[in-house]
Amino acid sequence: MFTSVIRRTWFAVLSVGFMLAIGGQALADSKVGALAPGSKAASIQPSQCVEPTPYMRRHHMELILHQRDKTVHEGIRSKKYSLAACIDCHVARGDGGREVPVNAEGQFCDSCHDYVGVSLTCFQCHATVPTPASAHK
Ligand code: HEC
Ligand code: HEC
Ligand code: HEC
Image (cartoon, rainbow, N blue to C red):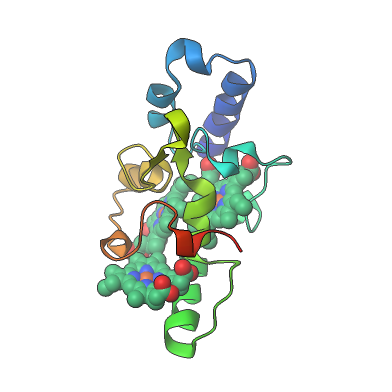
């Protein structure tokens, strides 16, 4: 679909090394749902999320909300659909590994949401960059 086409385009652009030439951040910022430059997600080969991408596009909110309920109400902590893990893998890393908050304008968790008019309250409490406690174990 739309996001998949532009994502592939973005990868194509990346792979031919245009990123530096045209200012990777500005380009990434204009691509809804594009993987963040410098993120672990962007470096994984073969490229894979915790579930297949088309499923993630439509259902990621159900996975994390369900995960939250399991953790907060039942005390079950699984890493697979942890919000902390989403952030650890999807956060952009800029110059010198500096992490860019996932919900900053144009960043991974903002791009589609801005596009569809969703506004998350999650980050009032949850960290928007990986924290030592959230790092993969
Ligand atoms: C008022 C503060 C607050 C808000 C707002 C909030 N959470 Fe949480 N959340 C917590 C606390 C506290 C925990 C339990 C401590 C922990 O596990 O980090 C938690 C745990 C979780 C977990 C399980 C731990 C993990 O990293 O997977 C998930 C998933 C989660 N929240 C998702 C969400 C999502 C999605 C939203 C937004 C829709 C949200 N939370 C909004 C406070 C909040
Ligand atoms: C270990 C790394 C990793 C983790 C953890 C991870 N993802 Fe992903 N995610 C990826 C990769 C890589 C892709 C792109 C897959 C592809 O190219 O098809 C992706 C794709 C996505 C997409 C689709 C993006 C698009 O352009 O259409 C969404 C939405 C998404 N992830 C959300 C999440 C959420 C929410 C979580 C936490 C529950 C999460 N991801 C956890 C690596 C990860
Ligand atoms: C590929 C586009 C895309 C990406 C990337 C994306 N989302 Fe979403 N997200 C959506 C769409 C579309 C909705 C609204 C679905 C609806 O209205 O039912 C949504 C809704 C949500 C909701 C539910 C909001 C609510 O108030 O009910 C949560 C939670 C959420 N996303 C978390 C995340 C997190 C965390 C990330 C980054 C790791 C992320 N999303 C990245 C497209 C995306």
